[in-house]
Image (cartoon, rainbow, N blue to C red; front, side, top):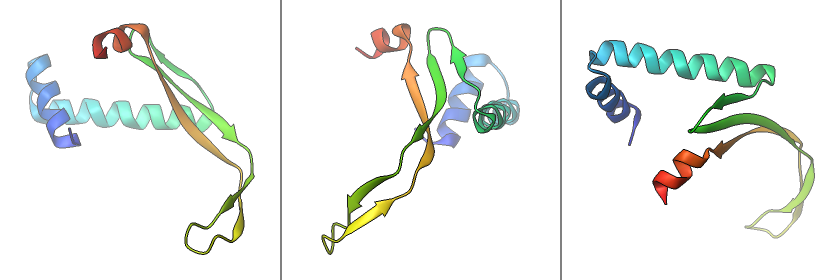
Length: 90
């Protein structure tokens, strides 16, 4: 499902226009991104939680040459599904 399909599904499920659904989705994405950038954790009960963790620097290998390279440390976004979502998928 891409963004346009998600907007259409939200609009039909919530009985709203596609324009309003797009505004709501964009607001959710923007707010979530800002919160994660600050290092906050976002928890949606039943759905799951988004958090930011630090990945330490490590050594890796270039798959084409086999040469060892240094991979720098960085922050990554993690999503942990909630129990209701996990039960629904399984």
